[in-house]
Image (cartoon, rainbow, N blue to C red; front, side):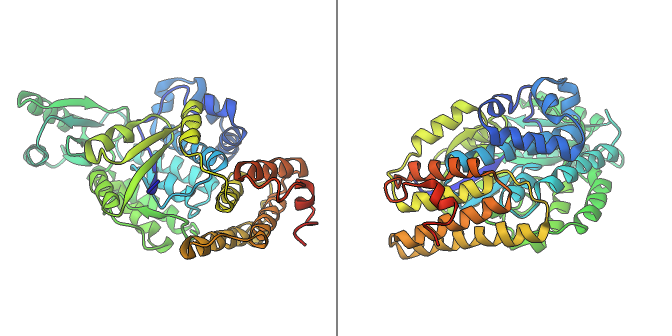
Length: 421
């Protein structure tokens, strides 16, 4: 399999029932949704599973809901598949999901941030005064010209999403969007309104961008474990120091999705995994770079399909990649920030360094290298205050999937550091 990318959907992907089946089958998904409930002091799970679609579609609810669903899918992937990706990209809101899964943003803080982001966006334009609509069957240059001709002070419409060669999204004042719709229909375009409650990625969002920037400036960001592509410029983040600026610009800038996918294809990406509800990004990919295969990853049957297709022969590198996956997906019960950095972040990076060493040298790790990886994983689980029973279960799963049970037959010894001492 060639280079891989994780794709994270944006708003309008929500639907009643999302993540319900995933949570029923995978405890890590259930734990992820429970974390969101606690962080937001609301029953987000119930809203996603069986709530009212109008309530879920409200921007302040849809954004944390899609973020939580996306992180849940990613954690299931890391627990069940464990093979890291080279890149990550998210459509609009999905860019924040990508940053969370790349380790640059804290999940709990991100949930609170996107809830505020949704509120700021909704407050920027009164409910019912803004709209967004997808436009197909029309040359993009013609849509750009029409928006420019129709816009006037207090009645603005712009292209907010360059989704594919066949689709753009227009955004702005509801009246202006309706006028654009009428004009577009007359010249043969297809126009479909989106399930959103504010005109995202338009100049009308400037007040929201200013408020979000203040929140972002108060946050702390970490280095990214994957290369993240920015919506605003279709280029990679250079580092965490760019997060505040790029996420602020994203609020008023159009989403350069087509350009982002073309950038990734040019760098050798052949496979993508859509983490979260729906398959919108899969459909867009078919119109941009159909040679890139996209695997939806939001339902249990999709998890099983990917697991079957990505099954690899047992080898030591599988143990390393699965250990990284387990380190990410194991629930944390330790909120001591210093202890977490020392006992989770540092050993995780050490495992990554071991993986990179052998990938670059194309040599096979020896038993002592694998012992070190498992020792570091035990340190991570101990720091996260994982129970001994769960530690044993996870170690046994890794050994079974990597075909190395015969080399390390006693998981209890590994956990107690008897073999690893």
